[in-house]
Length: 110
Length: 114
Image (cartoon, rainbow over all chains, first blue to last red):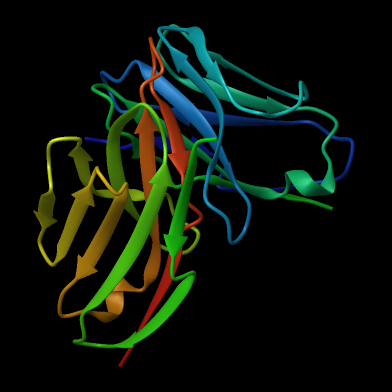
């Protein structure tokens, strides 16, 4: 069984650009959540989606948005990138509450 | 304010030795506590998950304890191996109605040296 898959694995952007990160949950998992992990810190919660509806939002600006598709995959969008957005972006899926994380997308903003 | 604090921030031990990592939390209402292992640049992998009524849970050489009265948890690693070098993150879940809220600690960075 495939685990949580994220793409791209690495990307470099410049300030002001936007980025779209993608996540495919484990088959059968209907909940997807997104986390930002700055180097040396623990993950910070950004969004949770369940059955295509937003169920939770962390303390992030409106430049961050997300959506979940009918097949339960998800996208995280970040507009007007700032240097401080450089981080590992983790996606996690769950069925019964236990989180299964993907390997993350490493975003570098120059 | 819901918080999870971990100690030590980093730790170096020799291969074969044991170590204990600490997690203190102020999360209410408490739902469960999880320990994750995160290799550098990789996603976290679950080690254990404990609810209010569980005091101890083991996963191979990893043993987690939970004291819900003092709001403390520990992760004990026995006979450490080089592959145990990673960041260990404590995550506490708070009941939040339709969905629980997860509060992450900043992790303990463990380095196992030969």
